[in-house]
Length: 164
Image (cartoon, rainbow, N blue to C red; front, side):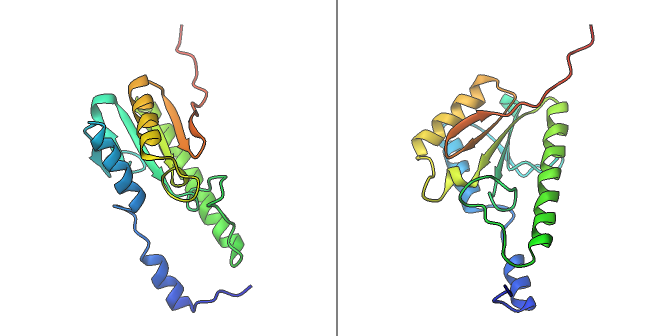
């Protein structure tokens, strides 16, 4: 199936996709603020340039778009055109996410990924449910988790045991 747009129009459309202050980031920032959490945004000194950094809790929060980061949900659809290109590009995003999260964890940060589907769409969580999950994880001391339409899930990677 051919792209319905010319290369120039497709390129213009892709450049217009925001990388900061997106609607899902704004919603999450509002919920964190309402819950009384202080945070910094888009810290370029940290791996992956996290969307939110909560220094008091040693927490990092990423908001991941379901398409760009290949979440297995109803918002992710494999493109019908240039499929190999898109799958390779998205695969590199996923690998970079793993590398960045691993680095942050090695540096002692706790990491939470909030998926786009939890923040928008037909199955999104309510503000109250989302705020409750955020507070639960931030205050719990859990090392690594993600929030999607089903709620919160621990995703801690295997870590080597400390030397005896």
